[in-house]
Length: 139
Picture (cartoon, helix red, strand yellow):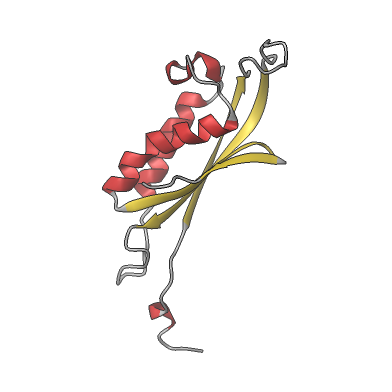
């Protein structure tokens, strides 16, 4: 074993997750232009963050995710147990898993930036077998 293993270079990703229960429907979903019926999901959100310097500090922490975790939970409270279409941010936006992932990115970006982190990916699961993944081109 390398006694200086803690100095091996590389990039770390920190993962934070949360969940919420909400309903939505998609606008103009069917070929005739009609909306999808209202239905609910047990959603899960996964957030992958890296430090802007891509490594670890001398104390072995790449990114202290506590503040971002708090902000994620505040976002989850806003979207939990509601009809997502009725949220102000989704009044004119189709509430697809893709757009919900972008919504989380938009809400969390300033906290990640302030803490010198980079959001690498956000996954929004509609259930156990399907998710949309948003990977920003730049943050």
